[in-house]
Image (tube, rainbow, N blue to C red; front, top):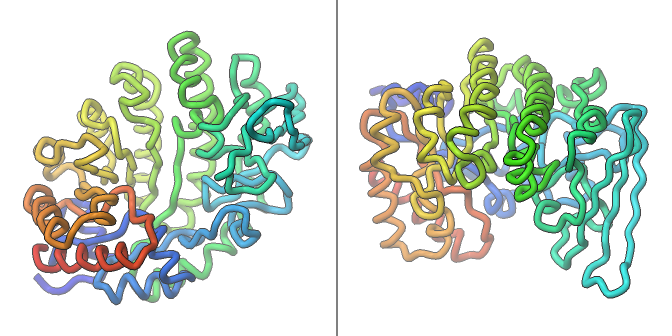
Length: 407
């Protein structure tokens, strides 16, 4: 086959069509973003290594939360009304919402407590979290974030009475947010066009947002005790997500990615998944396809019992196949997905960071032998490479060299 451009190779892989060689496209770029800071440097380094880089709107590079630079593309002129977890299109509250924040030292408590109150026209909402030693945001308490879940003392949504108020925090993008996103995306759109690279947007969201709002354990209990409340909350989030999605799809992206880290069977039974999550997922997939955009679903653990429903939803690619901590049976997944859905992953990221070169070669060879035949596979360490040591950098090069030898 004639040599393909990076974008052509990935689009063909996403469509389960023949490619000149199995692509290797890194799923998350935390370590490489440290080694090669700045979007042009990051993409150039991946290209130099022979990888297939993604161009993310508005920017892949994310500095350490708390650095003022991390606000690029995330907020308008709303101090405190910023959500770093959902990079890209700004997240904002209704203009009538007032926010009160404070930091408290509670006698006898191990940690200071960060408090935030949202005064909405439908009533107040309150969230608080312990400011542990590893808290990355200074004295800020963001709207939603993974860090809050494990440190929360009070979550935003606890009962049905909170739903009317939470609607004021899930506002569709306004004209200013849309203009901000388009301006912030312009350089990367041009970069993708100039270098013929795949243009992608992170993140669509549903149950992950519910987990941020309710807490993970609390969401599980709430689903068991008050399923109608959870169903209504998920409908609200889905409508909010679709409004954001329409703006992004209009930018001419190639791939929309929905984050589903909290959508596996670690938290949802197959029955609840079919009842509460699958209908929204199908609608989101159909929306992307109506715009001619590929749909990616990132689910790294608890996916095996859901595979038939994931295929039923019609996603183009399942991202995050981790045979170690994710519980993926690579052979079983390939047998179900062959010719129907692309698979992206195959190797555990921590293994790449900590293993010997021989172990890395063995694991890469095995992943390619199982997942690459009959097309529809993209190799990456799952969930990415986080350690920034020289050893990990060498190991990632061993990973890339093994891929080149066996692809």
